[in-house]
Image (cartoon, helix red, strand yellow):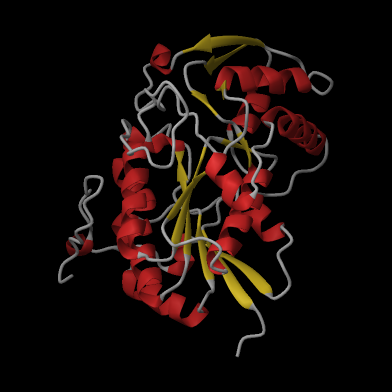
Length: 336
C-alpha cells in the first residue's frame, strides 16, 4: 500500500508547473510533474504503461495551455498539443478510473457575447487555438466519468514566459511599444490559478463535486492587454525607463489567428462550489512586477522550457489522428 497519494501534473509548463510543485499540499499527498514526452503522450501504449505504473490518485493536465499567437501557422502542433494528446490522456485516465482535471481557455468562445460567458454556453471558437482547446474539452468529456474542466483567461506571473515579462522586457528598450487593445478578458495571476487548481483537484478527488464539472476562474476586473501593460509599466518605473505605449489591433501588423474580442468569464459557480474568489489582477500584478524587476538585478537561473512534442517523429503516419470537429469523439487511429 502506498504511503501517500500521487497527484500527477502533466506538462512542465514553465508558467504553471513550478508554482504547482512548490505549493503546499495536504499531508498524505505527493506531487510529481512530468513532461508530455516523459509520459508518452501521442504514444498511447506507452502512456498507458506509465499511468499504470504511476497509479496516480489525480491527474492535472496543463499540457497545451499556451499562447495562441502562432497557432495559425503551426496547426499540426496546435492540434497535437491541445487536442490529440488530451484525447489520449483522457482515454487512458478514463479507462483506469483516474480523476482528471483539465486546464482549458476562454478562447473556446468566439468573444461576441455582450456579457460574461457561463459554463453552460456552447463553445464556438473562431481561432485554430480555440478550436483545438474546444476539441480537447470534448475528448475529456467523451472518455472520462470523473473529470473537471477549469477555463481561465490569459496568465501572468513571475516565472516562465508570459505577456507580463514580455512587456517589461520591451519596456527596458524605451521608445514605442505597440500593445493590442481589442481583447477584453480577465487577466489571471498564475499563483492564484494554481491555488484554484489545487482546490478543485482535491475536491474532485474527494468526491465533493460530481464528475463532469466545468468551472471558470480568472482575475477581475476585465481589461485589455493594453490596460494591463500600462499598469505594469507604471509599476516598473522605479526600476526601468517608461516607454510610450501605442494601442493597436492585431491586424495592424498582419497578425492572423488573433484572440477572440471579449472573453469575460462568469466565475460565480467556482465561488459557490469551492469558495474561490476572483483575484484582483492589479494587486497581483504589482507584486509580480516588483519580483521580476528585482530578480533582473541578480544573476538569473537558467529556465528549461517544456520541450515541444515531436509529433511527426514520434507517431507513425498511419497512427496520426485527423482534426475532429468540436463534439465529434470518434477515434480515427488505425485499428481502434
